[in-house]
Length: 423
Image (cartoon, rainbow, N blue to C red; front, side, top):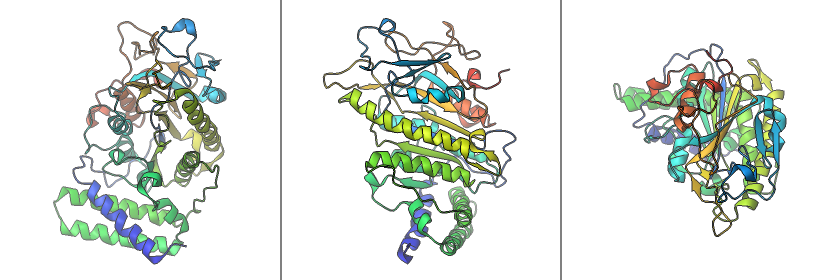
């Protein structure tokens, strides 16, 4: 049962965090909420934290396809579905191949986790802390959802966007999960909390007329008030225990929270940080990648199944939700002296949802797993093309949401080949 002290801490603590993080934000959300006009309604961005080894997942290779320096998996099964090739660890996802799109060889231009994580949540290189995340931008087009974006289980403060609302991972930051408090709170407590936020928003707006940071923070507080007001009317989120292993349970809870948030139309976007850097395998790469990928694939399979099972008044979730899965960096193809693999400034993405070309695999890599150029209209290899860049993924997602990428500083190329229909 939520105590009065928990209730007060939740109201004042979250309000203070929003006020602090809104400073310097360059993105002011419009008061009028735009309809989605046929664009995806929900967006889920999933970080496999640490860097998955694509030889085991989306870009497997035969020995004849790679240089001798490349360390291939011991279990090097490759499952082919049409033009897609799935490595041994992601092979169970092959049944979803018609709905999944793979993009390999994406350059991220960093081998640093902090930089890579910040870039991942922007889907953009060359960023600064005051920039809104890519989901925050997409959420400016939301239609009727009270909250723009919810961030779930972030393991580092560097990943917090100016509009951050959500929960940090308790392994690093201790207990105090906002979603746990919400699940325990009564509708009456949530309504009272809504009133507190609205009063804070009005007070802040009155105290700083013309002060842009204060006005922006008041907008965020109103959004959070809207969120708690709506939450009071939906079923509480109760996550069953899926595993006694903390990392596995954290993955299960995160994906279940994403489903609950979009099923109840509580937000436009959900950002998930999975694995507590468990994919950062400088030591014993093969067994650790096997463990992390195996756990993720089982839970992601369940997530995809639930997307097809659950629906709300806007339709079946799978038909309205774009899901983007990737890492902040990749694994170097050669094994080191500790049987691990070090960082590589390149990774791959798995995407699904409306507007995307399912059943396809794009982005070729060479004999040392280096990304090679492709044509941005067709996605086919092209000597005169260019190697995919993280900025291109961000620009494509904004375009899919009906936004002009250049307006928000995204100089990447829109990947026409990823679109379900091309002009």
